[in-house]
Structures are given as structure tokens and as C-alpha cells.
Amino acid sequence: MNKRPWAFVVGGLLVALLLAGVVSNYASSHPDGLDSSLLKGCTVDADHNITGGSCPAQQARDHELADSPLADYGVRGIDNAFLSTGLSGVLGVLLTFAVGAGAFWLLRRRGAAATAGGGTTTDAATTAGAGTAPDAAPAAGGPATRS
Image 1 (cartoon, rainbow, N blue to C red):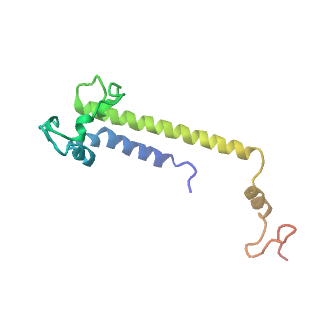
Image 2 (image 1 turned 45 degrees about the horizontal axis):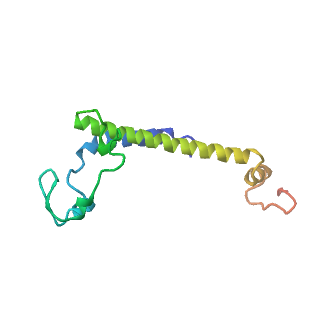
Image 3 (image 1 turned 135 degrees about the horizontal axis):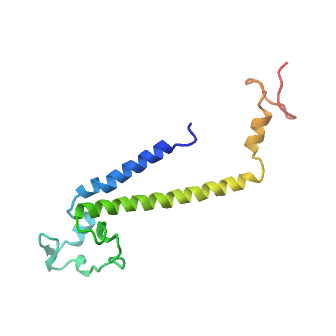
């Protein structure tokens, strides 16, 4: 197997960027199951604003990070909704990829440092059995030889 699957990683990143940057703009604007269940018992206008009735959604408050630069699936300060949503998705994918790549890099360094101190059992067994015949079983004292 290939030791450096860079083509696979780059291809996956490009697909994720395409989905986040373009396809996400075509997601449904209708409320999902959770939103619609919270609105049961209330009357709602075309803009999904509660106009009457009684439902759990009336208790909703804005999130603490509602004023953040990437709140509400968009980038604050960009007026074009298509561009704002796409850019928000692309930034999210890149940030997630960077965190994941950093975590994998740290884990790989930690694993390499742990095995750098001494040889592993697998390495010793592979070196010792390098000259053996495929059908010969090694003896208890060392590698098997064929007469």
C-alpha cells in the first residue's frame, strides 16, 4: 500500500470544499424535525416568525456566540448571501482540516518518539528470519536452516 496517500487526502479536501462552498447554498431552507417540533402549537408567518399560540420555541434565546464572525451559516460583513454561506463553509472545512491534521501530526510524532528508543519485537523477528525458507519452522534456539 502507498505510504503517502496525499492524492486521496487532497481529493477528499477538494470534495469537502466544493460541498461546503457551493452545494451548501442549495440546502433546504425549511425547518428540520427539531425546529418544526418546537413550533407545534404556535402560528408562524412566512418568515418563520411566531405570531401567536404557545410552543417551546417561544422560550428560545440567542446563543452566546450569535455575534461571532461565522454565526448563522454566513460571514458577518458580506452582504451577498451566496458568497457569505459558501465562504463560511470553506472556512469551516479548512479550520477542521487544520485541527485534524495537527492532531494526526502530534500523534504521529508521539508514536515515532515512543518507538525510537528501542527496536520493536516485529523488527527483530523480521531481521532474524530474513534468510529462512518459507516452509521451515524456526527452532527454539534461532532461525531455521535448510539442509
